[in-house]
Image 1: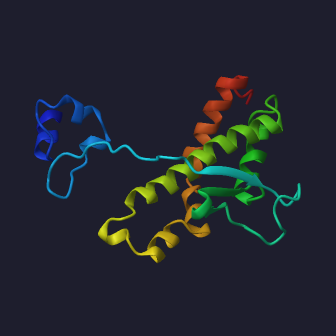
Image 2 (image 1 turned 90 degrees about the horizontal axis):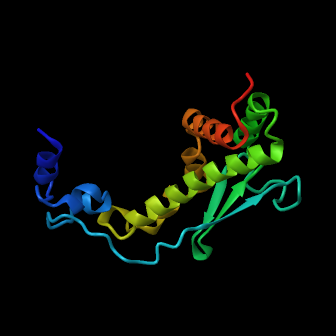
Length: 174
């Protein structure tokens, strides 16, 4: 079965190239029709990094957690002191001694922010459907534990950060 037939089989039109090339339009509505992009707020959550070291995070707040999401403010508070983030920095300092710690942290923060924002927005996109209409379900999916889990793919994240650092500061000497 070629790609066009597969699209057609799942509700798209064999001649509808727009549906094939538009990831969001490829989804099927409840009535079986190809989905369409919806115009909406699509406002990205803001990410603020906090640390006990600089006094922006209380000592026991977000302890050993990656982040917290506050829905009413559309705000993600990311814990710069989370041990996995610190482990990334230590490993990357060895691989990229010429990059500098601030540069390494900046790249790490970019990738973690992307993971956190995508996780929050992904759950928000499920809101309102029958199985995601319960406030407790949404709170669970956006909890500190869930956001910590969302940033745990270490190998993929580390590989992307290394690729980005190599592009910005040059290849690792090791």
